[in-house]
Image 1 (cartoon, rainbow over the protein chains, first blue to last red):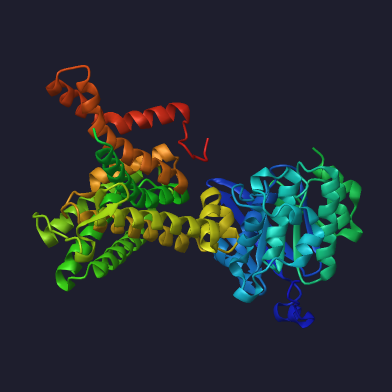
Image 2: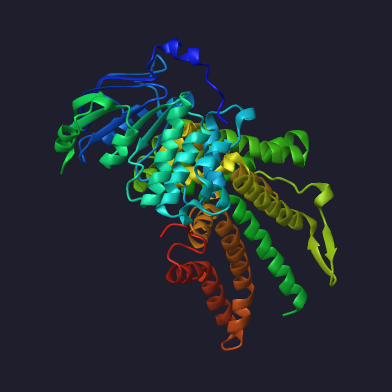
Length: 247
Length: 306
């Protein structure tokens, strides 16, 4: 199981696990993010909605440290990690389930899961039981090569690998993309379970509106690199959001 | 030709092959994991041989000499990786070839400056001198048998490292996706330095082992390095198993070709012509082998990439 995080630990860095403050990001001369701000809190799901190409993935890449921001700050557990490299952010507890899954095709399922050990002290290097409870198929396929799994199974493996890291912040980039409905349900259940545990902040980028709405506690809508709408999911004006993300 | 001579030549081919493997293993690892073409791999082989010859000369101990070859080549590899090589990963292969070619020149001239142009000699230790009698009444040099043993032990050790350890998992994972392995919290630059130093240490070991049957001199690494490239192309770039199979194939093909082809041509032409044609063809044989393998399997015997 995951090592418990004392409830009082939230107060060490305030309520927010992740605090993104007015970040800009450029790809060469093109600006991909403009003054984007967002927070994520343990036990809550922050959902990022928006059409294709509006900067959702770029935002996640900035949070994980895969791309450098050109302005603004990113704080994680109260620490300024704006200039921290990707592997150091992962070590401090940010786990990413990237778009396209990026599992290691030549490694077995077990080895794929074990790549999540890098930040853990030796005594914690085990695969948490709830990974197999959430995704039983992984247990049946431990010896198979990652590349031999179906797309949906690979997505479950990518989430499982992230959970092996015992992250404090889980970022998921379109986990339902190209996945069959039964597995989408499993993934939704997994996210609901992780939220209910309450020790992990979750940022979910999604195009599949109903899936995102059902899981969201908070949401932002992005357009052209900017956040155009934000709020608590309970107060969401669905028609307005749908209008903004419709193709 | 007698059976005994043939078996001896096969053993010679295997001995040559396992040394090529120890050399090629590092080259294929570095290419597979970091996508780097390292022409200076032969220089690390030379550094290992010089370190071994120097330490053997000072201490008289062959085992210490081998340890020195591993340590010196690993250290040289780690330094070169940190100072030069890591700036090349993002560059294209032509830049890598140019920069590592420059390293060859620097290492060669540096070694000439330190040790002079005359070859050094590294003696086979007493306890491995002389022949061993094999079943069937074959007498074969103990040292060459020991080389085959060391080569196979290195192959086994590398297999265990890659297949059974967490470092091995990271190496295989880094091969397919560097960005993701970093996002899992692995310090990729440390991993690269380690892999490079490991490959360098093996090249150094090969240099020391071969240095005892040939001479230790500047420029000794380049011919071997070219053969090692042939090996990794045949075996499939990045594949250790491919490197093992291909190096044994190349070693045996080259050795047997040199012996058998002149004999074969003597059946159909004048002996002096047969010698000429046979040995000319023999020296081309491994490149013909490479061409044939590439026609049938464009990514090599065990190449993962299409």
